[in-house]
Image (tube, rainbow, N blue to C red; front, side):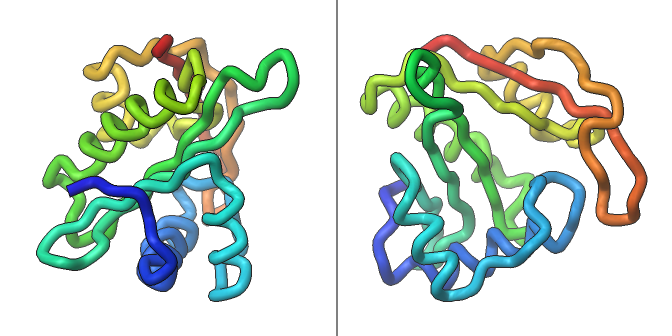
Amino acid sequence: MIRAYAPQDVARMIDIWNEVVADGVAFPQEEPLNEETGAAFFAAQSHCGVAEADGQVVGLYILHPNNVGRCGHIANASYAVDARCRGHHVGEQLVQDSLAQAKELGFRVLQFNAVVESNHAARHLYERLGFVQLGTIPGGFRLKNGQYENICPYYRVL
């Protein structure tokens, strides 16, 4: 089940978010969230959705404008799924919900700025859901081990 996050979800959301940050292969963030920064971070989004299974939060997404002013109609989103739940279509449900929420909030496009080229599962999902790759930015992402990898921006009209 995908639903809007509630304050009681924040601790679990922080755990899942920090797991992806610590992996160092998908999110650009390097600093983990704590109780204070996490609560502020999630509250600042246009929308946060969580995936719940058996009463536990197992994934989440954040949705917000990709830019301001004349480009404020383009949304951006990030997704995080508990490592134990990956491969069970949780991410797909999160992306589908974010598309619906983005449209409901008045966004016209959903854009991903920095999909790491080796993130084949995400790229396959996005392409299957109708996202279009804009190109490749050579060495646009610094991995946790210090190596650089290409990133692939994607977009989808809502």
